[in-house]
Image (cartoon, rainbow, N blue to C red):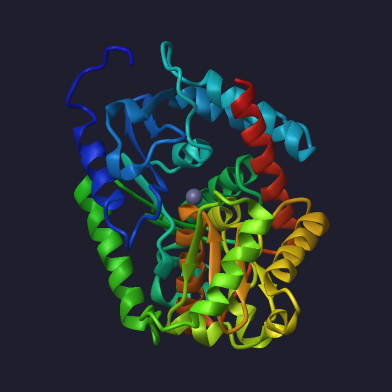
Length: 374
Ligand SMILES: [Zn+2]
């Protein structure tokens, strides 16, 4: 990385790591942070985990250049627009910077505080993914902004920018807390201590409200049946597939039937879609009546792949357990379960709508494609 005054980022690095290490706040290093210093914003680069981030995990960007983005006209077409904005974001990096800024860099830039910490804590998402989350937020956090579900990237940053301007016009103040429906929270303050105080207060308020917490006590399972499920999943995904089984009191309740399964049957946030899939595959217990249970399980996985154009990342077998392909899928699916339980306090689950799920699925593909091409 280029020469930069050492020490300047110490506060941002330690603030980022402290949240990154705390599982109550961060899963898989997700979320992002930034600091503003005059005309320069230091924002997390894509692909760095908050818990282990160092100075070289931040990209320096020009704030005047970023604010010029709002004077431009972009294509209406989603992918043409996001490509153009991404190019402009890259062009707002200071000379010598080579890393790709977080996709949420534009949003960090429109929040006029020295420090911004954006996270997706399960308890917060119980609120942002709850049917009555918006009403609850108005009562519990009257000073906060609530942003409805909109397309991530440029559109989201623009909606936040306009909502901030409207708030400032009527309140003579700038909000420190922004809740994003089906996504997470942004907190801004002029010092790391300010950020910590706000997060502590938000989490305490939510914690005091929550009527039920997830019960992840493990339960015993029938080893023969589980072996058949593993055999079927390996038939589908290959002998070397990394398959993680999960079963606990909470899942046992959810896996009783399709109705009890509903709260964990779709996607809450972009991270869930990217890591644990846009929806899990439900397999009912009739597979155990089949002459060859393993082959029947493999067949159901194939059927899902053909229908959806992508294989399942998570397979839920009625009454038996949840099986995830890889650690990321398993961790994010457990997060789905937590969000579902926390949302019971806020009117029950509200998933992302299908259009938004499609947008994220396609967007992720585009992002991935461009990252391998570069
Ligand atoms: Zn986010």
